[in-house]
Image 1 (cartoon, one colour):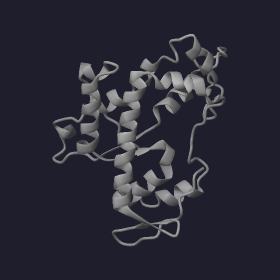
Image 2 (cartoon, rainbow, N blue to C red):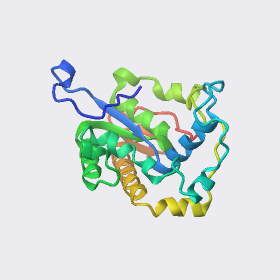
Image 3 (cartoon, rainbow, N blue to C red):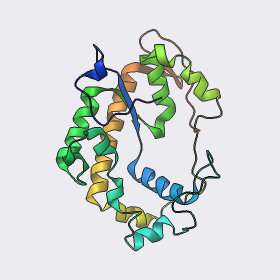
Image 4 (cartoon, rainbow, N blue to C red):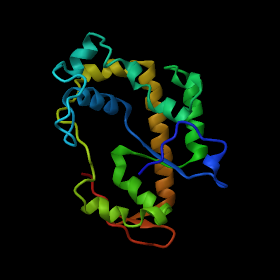
Length: 216
């Protein structure tokens, strides 16, 4: 569904016109916690597969207390380098240059970057801006049973003191800054695309009425 590339190719993959880049990001701490428990308990998509940390029942909170490797803030350094590119500096955790490069690429090379926390809105924007590919996507999302295809089998919400410790990290601050930047840009695009009328999204271009997007 999503075209994901770590670098914008100069030759456009042999095409005469540049491809349309879209992507989606997630709150960095939520992503890390979800992955932490995923490699221990798996998910409901393929529940029979044994994950690499299966049998390890240490909670994320306990891992953070002992400064464990699996919950290290360095593991948060994921979305910035993905948008930054293949340059070695992109993968240097805490690089200010990488953060700025990631922001530049998001603004200049992506049509839209959504957030998982507003997935329904992201799909609505895709249908409005790329109807050739996404016509009917909103209706399918609202009526389908696989709107969220995978769900981690077991996930424990971190304690406030755990969250505070992670938030003290420079890497979290930078990844969160990029996430907030992406979120602000997405809201700008969404508001350029739709008006909100009586709880329903109305496309500004042709006044097409979308069904109300309900959180799942």
